Length: 445
Image (cartoon, rainbow, N blue to C red; front, top):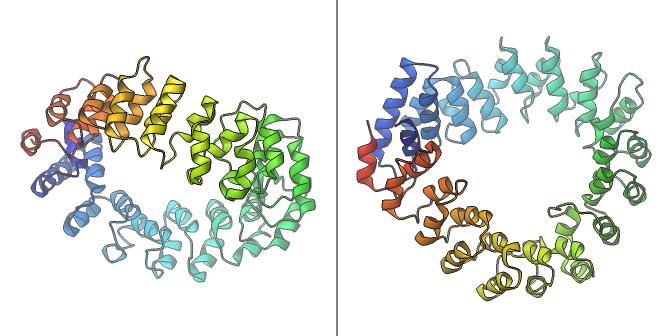
């Protein structure tokens, strides 16, 4: 029964009176057994609901500061509902989300629990008096966290801190003044290596020194940094280590001709690369017509291609290119079916992932022989999936819980799945908004 009740707690169609009953049950269970995992799961399922009344939110928040913090991060608990004295974790969460009362910060910066102060130190936009208190905190972990995240001018002072770990944290902070970072980079006591890899404003000579590190992982980290110039990009593109060359390919300003050289012959499964994502339609014309399928495939991963490029790639002779472009919105059903006719199992799952795939097309894909398991997973999550298509998905262990949660699954099938031996499937069925109301009532204790 426990998985079913947890599923009901998350069911968006659960009637208000049943939400009340579940909340009462969860709180009673939590009071009887504070370590109850069932109660915790039920409470969190209820806390995620979008239809909670304000009094229900306050009742959940009063259960524990941990739950109050969860509600704060979830966006349902407001500053007016929080007392920083009794709910310090929730107060810090609201400050972290920039929805808290800044007057709380000084009080929390002197809180006896160092974990509260440590979490506060990473919050953005704190008042300077609270920042100064945290910078002088007796716990160096708190000071280090502040040095890493604050956007306050205090970073220049923390860059001179006697603890080298605090200085390293200050060096990694993009808000630390450049002149202080350059001094730290010359500090013989500090081994910065990866520390400056997020900075995009360093002198090219410093990037060159950092990117010449003997450790390939360090070189790879700097290879994709937007701050490095064209000369260093080309140096790193010729690096003997594959991981470095692959990192260069992810640089947002790599020349397209160099990117093509890096990709050809590399069997990596590339995701959409920043340079391709930022390219103009005119820039895409040449790589889209490349004689190398690996280069055409990079362009095919864009989801905002001009229609003429999108449709040209949809009829590409190479299955890998077609597979990459198949999920692109705007493709006609005729083109999608033609992809399957030409390339079969190689593109089935990608076609099923197309947001415009129709219900009949999804049914057709589930019936294709030979089949592909990934197709069933894509169909089970597709908003256009039909009842017959979803029933086919129930035959696959991975797709079964996804199909059980789909509102287009026939109600009688949903009801049957409540007794499934897989608790994940049963819970998903209980959370299905198409579950009949009468069945919801029967499931309640």
